[in-house]
Length: 77
Image (cartoon, rainbow, N blue to C red; front, side):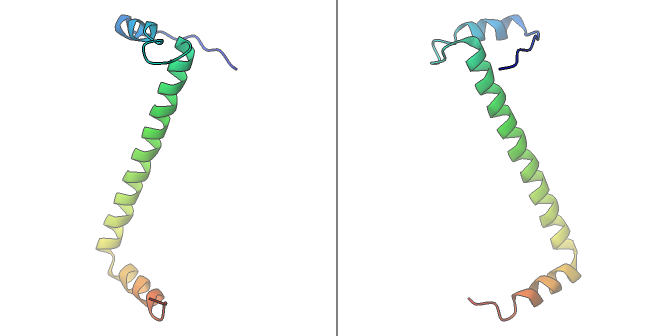
């Protein structure tokens, strides 16, 4: 496993010191979990924004709606 050196605020350091209270074996495990959760959260937000952009584009593009409708013609229901 790689090691990294970084700085945290005093309140964050105190929070990390309570790692056992939250069921972690050490501060590093707690921090890794927090990073994984943040990564997932950021990826979900990026997908949400992308979906909103696609929906906006679709709602404003009559040609795209027509193309989509044509592709659905004859599709099994």
